[in-house]
Length: 390
Ligand SMILES: [Zn+2]
Ligand SMILES: [Zn+2]
View 1 (cartoon, rainbow, N blue to C red):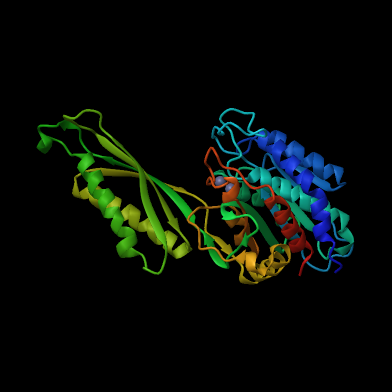
View 2 (view 1 turned 30 degrees about the vertical axis):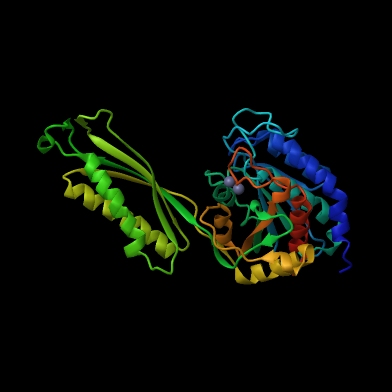
């Protein structure tokens, strides 16, 4: 294959930045990506691509057909949503919408996938398979991926492989990072109310104190990871919120805690769910209290396919050089691309977007989050090579 792909992407690099900044100025939250979806549909329309809008409410799907497909289609995914965060002031392309910010880089994901669509359209004759461009709503806690799959984005096209990218400000620009197997955590949240019997602080024997029960429960929860989980398996249980009582001399009726559990495989996930509940029930019962418990399931583990990762690494080496293709440690953050990877083999890949020399070091979801925009052509070229590649 005569390799003019780098040059084609470089020609687009000004547009990639312009698209990213246009999107950055107009952030929209999950399942509200109306302007963003219209922007995406307009760009795909300009390319003369088949476009479907309103998929899973605000999702957009473009399809580029190979002339003579010899393999099943590949799906490339970008997420489009922003976060309910006030952006730190001072950037010419800063958010124009108070309280909303593209603080996870999804503006860049959208721009890169549009860039890939543009390049792939120009080299369509080389495609051996159809390419499904999936612009997904609501990644940040809304499970937009699951909704898109539910509306047939995979089944309708008979997709055989799936790929997604994430710009990552904690990895240096110029690197591409991907790991085989479990790469990002499953997350589940729980809300547990320990309900006792309120009373006078001076007469605890007449009450059933939910605060003492909650304190014991939280200490006991620390033993779930330490004593119930295989020490070779990473897991986290964190109680991030505890609320009870309002006066020093009153025993309240209830204490309510909220927490999160993270794990990297389904067995550990199940075990965490079961043990956390058992510990809370046991400590509540021992204190003569009742437990009201609700589990809020989050995303499953992101599990990358070994063969797909090997292919990505080969393509990535052409983009950034072999020395800059890195295997990162598993990450305890969660990603709803996990749902795609449960349906078809593929990989979720990090594109380094941090640059300490330029002060681009803020983590994702922070008000000062930014990306080094020279990451945009890197991600675009990788998407193009994945779609065209073996
Ligand atoms: Zn995020
Ligand atoms: Zn994200």
